Image (cartoon, rainbow, N blue to C red; front, side):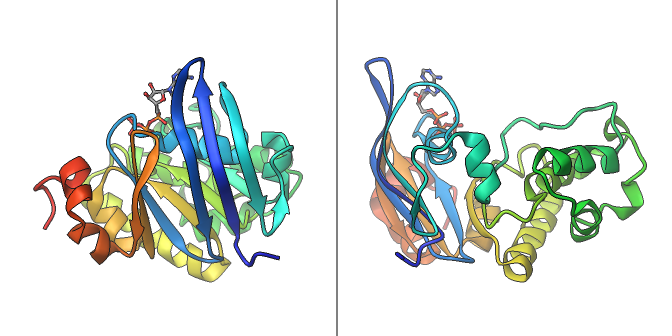
Length: 237
Ligand SMILES: Nc1ncnc2c1ncn2[C@@H]1O[C@H](COP(=O)(O)OP(=O)(O)OP(=O)(O)O)[C@@H](O)[C@H]1O
């Protein structure tokens, strides 16, 4: 056993002749929240896809989940062992009620912790409302609920705070932090909101042009001049 919750070793993904992710290795310790940042097109979503077995292109590399090589498993089988993924675009069905959607996701994941997820995500008061009728911030929380059905031990989150106001983003960040602690979930999160990333990540990995540019605790990343030049610019101090 490696002791890691999730490891990607020498992960490469090509789309035709284009290398979107180039020999990237990443290892998450159980319970950590890892931020994954970098400029547009750096390969962040592609790396998540490669880890969870989704998307097109050709993937090379090894994915280990709690020490077990899962590189040969389909995305569905990886979900079943406990590796969940959420997407930039919301996955919810506008016409279904909140509880119905979570329950549907639960039966697809062959589990039934609908009520537990509703409670943990603070969705009880909205459970009987159609997704179309709740606020965008609540819809993003529902998205997170769908990914958390079945209590996956590793969660890959792609821009969960996209489109949220600063205060909504920070509420979501706090919720994630609490869930990571109380449920022991390990999280890899891609997010362009640097307040969210720096406030919740135990460690941050920076991708640039498909490769790892830096990896370390937040304060180290903020002080890294290469990272500042490639991504953070002067927007963060
Ligand atoms: N299905 C695909 N076919 C061809 N090229 C792709 C495909 N998916 C992604 N790419 C390319 O791979 C590169 C990495 O894309 P990716 O979406 O992973 O970047 P990202 O860091 O997540 O960017 P963003 O922050 O804008 O979401 C980009 O140049 C993108 O155009």
